[in-house]
Structure formats: structure tokens, C-alpha cells
Length: 213
Figure 1 (cartoon, rainbow, N blue to C red):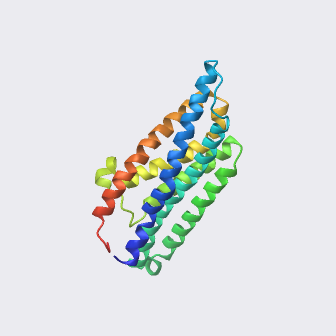
Figure 2: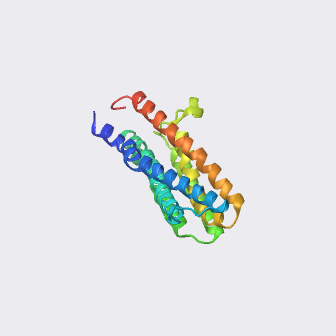
Figure 3: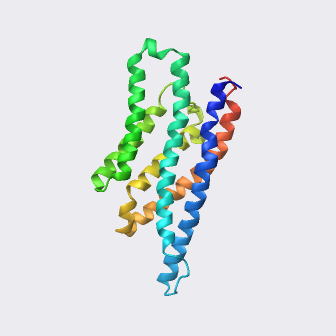
């Protein structure tokens, strides 16, 4: 294995040691929060701490940032590798500058989303972060598996990251409107399924991409 091959393993390593443990914790507190809500609705004194809901939100915010960061890291390696191999800096320096600015803008938009309060700004920064992921994903070198987009690690990853970003953006709304809470549950149920499929498709892609390729 070359040094580049070892760098490629950082993306799945972070997924295993960071994303999936956070996902498990988020799901645990989501279940606890729902059980407490149902018990209170039924008039039963719940033994589940009200902190369960707060922990669900806090860990969910960490999950969004981690999932988006790992997605960006997964895009960074093949893009930089292609730039170096094809000497893009010499032939199209403007493209390299654009890519660097897109990475910086996407990260910046995500950080702003965490701080935004007004709905218009949350919508704006969520859109910018999502657009940044999509634009970077279309760069040369990214293993997209376009012929089988319906079972692609890349497309699943982009969608699940965007779902996490949207969930973060609508977070204040779920406390004000029950319909938004339903949307939150639906989006995160889809994201959970895609997270599980990411483990399968990621292993497959690692087996298919040749060492040194």
C-alpha cells in the first residue's frame, strides 16, 4: 500500500470510531425521549430523565458536524490526489483555487448554520452547505459509481449529510410545530437507513478501488 492508500483509510476509520458511535447514542436518546413523551401523554409519571431530550439534541448536533466533516474529508482525498496526478495547478490554476474556496465556503457555511437563529439564515446556510457538498462531489477523481447511482456510496453519503444538515436547520421548529417534528422523524429515519447502507457500500468500494489507484 502506498501513502495515498493509507490516507484513503482515514475516511472509513473516522466513520467507524466517530459517526457510528454517535449514531447509536442519538438513537438511544431519541427512543428514551419518545418513551418519556408517550408516558407523560398517558398520564404516567415517567422515570426517564427530562435530560434525555436535551442529550438527544446535543449529540445530534455533534453527529451532523461529524457526518458533514467526514463527507468533506472523503471528497478531499480523491480531489487532491487527482489535482496532483494531473498537475491541474499548472494547467488550470483557477480550478484549484475554486476548489479550495469551495471547501472553505462549505465549512464556513456549516459553522454559520450552527450559530444562526433566524429561520431565513438557517435556511440560507443549510442551502449553502448542501450546495458546497454537491459541487465538490462533482469534481474529477471522486468515485461516484454513476452507472449504479441507486446503490452508490457517494450518493448515499451526500444525501445523508444533507439530511443531517436539514435536521439541524429545522431543529428550533420541531418545538413549535408538531408537523415539523414529524418531518424531523421521517428525515432521520431515512438517514438511519442510509447510514447503515453506507457501511455496506463503503466496504464494497474499498474492495473495488485498486491499491495505488
